[in-house]
Length: 260
Image 1 (tube, rainbow, N blue to C red):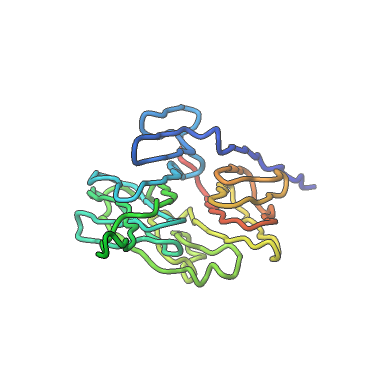
Image 2 (cartoon, rainbow, N blue to C red):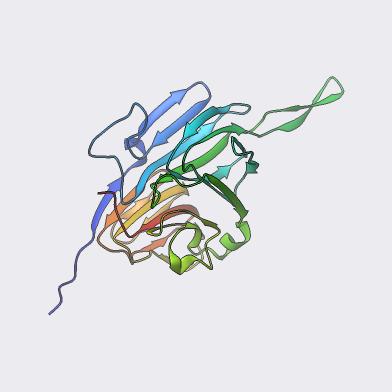
């Protein structure tokens, strides 16, 4: 006789996140980050960082180092300029997936690239206009000391389906589907732009899931309503359904391992 195992579901509300607010940055951290440290909240599965950042026009993160980390950036609004010490440069915007493998060490900067043309005394000039809102996520790599690499790819059209779309993955089963590759064979990041008139989305069946409502509102089976910034950590099995009445953008990490 088999006995069904009830997954462990841990709901984390938006307002309970750690917060960093300075002049140009409004950042909310789902896990311990920088000066915010809680030994009981350092990761879920292999996900170490889930930062929800808003950067004011014309500002951003100056050049800084990373090492031995898989970093995925997902822009929700505006545009973000990436430049790094390997010579990579690109503009990240909604619907474009970006991954940086820090490996043996890399320096990079991230700046708000939003601008517009303004008419001042009959002359046009460019001026920064729109905040950039993005989620940056870090997962540990399978091995340390790899060569740093960078990748970005447009997948906006794939998201029109309203279903879960593999955005970044190192898992073999998504080799032909994921937009960008990460150096962790136990993890995959999916995004769904849920529509109110569409069928519910079913979460993958995995030992560890992290469900984050990046925009809008959604409802998760067994949990109930979720608002923007809410997250659910699931351990012990997926298969729950996600739906929305008004529209939502949801980021789901599927993980088949955890940090020891």
